[in-house]
Amino acid sequence: MKVAVAASSPELDGPVDQRLGRCAWIVVVDTDSRESEALENPGALAGTGAGIAAAQLSADAGAEAVVAGSIGPNAIGALKAGGLMILKAGGCTVREAALAAAAGELEQVE
Image 1 (cartoon, rainbow, N blue to C red):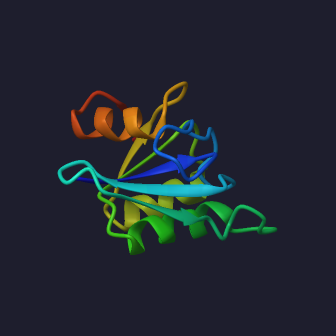
Image 2 (cartoon, helix red, strand yellow):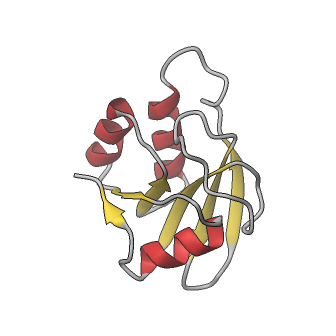
């Protein structure tokens, strides 16, 4: 499973960011191969449309699910339109969040 995790830093052992739209990085983790790719979030400093930009970046990277502490309504709409699963996690590392997502252990946002 490919999981896009909102992150404060590009490292797998860095913390999950509480904000999807304004996170500095989106780390895409392939939980099967354990490979990852850190992508700078273009929406982090945008005046508007940050959540939609982060959603698009995640979808373009091939993610099946997105994980963050909080996800705004515009990003939720964009993620749902793209067919991505939306999950909440906080207080853990990017690696832990990605593995928990793949194991079905995170709260899903409806």
